[in-house]
Amino acid sequence: MILVINDAKYGMGRTILFLVFVAMSLSGGWLVLKRTGNYDVDFFTKILGWILLIPGILGLLESLRILN
Image (cartoon, rainbow, N blue to C red; front, side, top):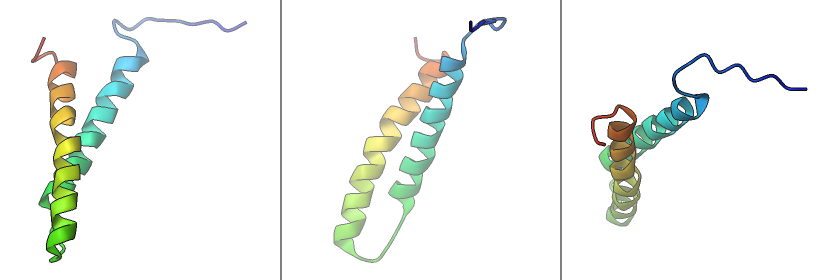
């Protein structure tokens, strides 16, 4: 039998989601700022970085309850 004690106001799921959004934002920001010198690679990494960064920032703002 598994006993679940939920003393916190929020479950662990919100904390894990917050950490995922932080990781997405950091990795996306790193990819946006990364320079390799090869224009084709830079273009691809910037697109991938923005794809990770924008949802990461929006998720962080929702996790911190700045956006409702």
